[in-house]
Length: 302
Image (cartoon, helix red, strand yellow):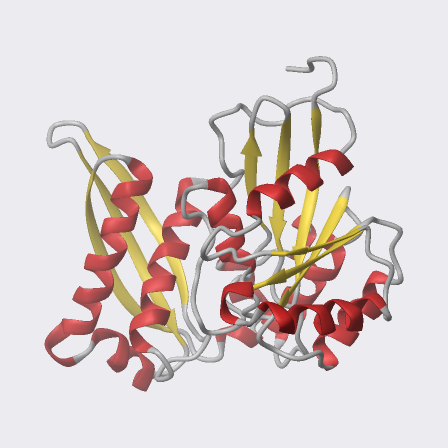
């Protein structure tokens, strides 16, 4: 499709960990495609969400939160985030209205000064602050960088999100629909299923198991005779003690992870799901390049 006046383009969402980038992406797309957690650094790959209407197609890239790397996985996540800035038509720099300006924001603004792409400042979580607190935040950022637009929103509540979409459309060039109108992401089902399982494991184990969880979906089979989809997946951790936490007493934690993930996977696939989970220890996998590649973290794709 390439109708007269149709807009299309690529938009990167960048910001410190836990400012609400994935919540915003899921709000706009209308379906869960990005992992959401109140733990920072949950997004590891560029997740492309595709928003399509009669006027435009916007391809969103949700980057890992910018932070100081502590291991090879962290190095990978930083490279993905910064490379995204050079590949797009527009950048959304998202900040949390509740948190003050810090070294993380200063670091991102330094990176923004290295690119020529227009940047919107998106102040998220405005539902959590008094309106009088917004003006000082806006003034602080205006003194540091010339933004194309400044838009306060609440990704969780949906406040001002439609206005932001309209302003994005105005900035995009005319172009074709890159994806069919009903496609919401360029990731295969396998990737999204793995992310849904990882989200539940992170949420349920809270602080006991940090970001040493990876999920590998080994099998997806559609069983026509029963009308169900069989999913077999492995949760990978770094230590035996973490394996015990994920499995839980008499297997209760693993069962709970499976039940919650299955509900989301059924919503994604639109059919009944039989989910089978295993837990495997691969020591220090976040610092082993071979294992990072096995789990889908490939620098050459970015």
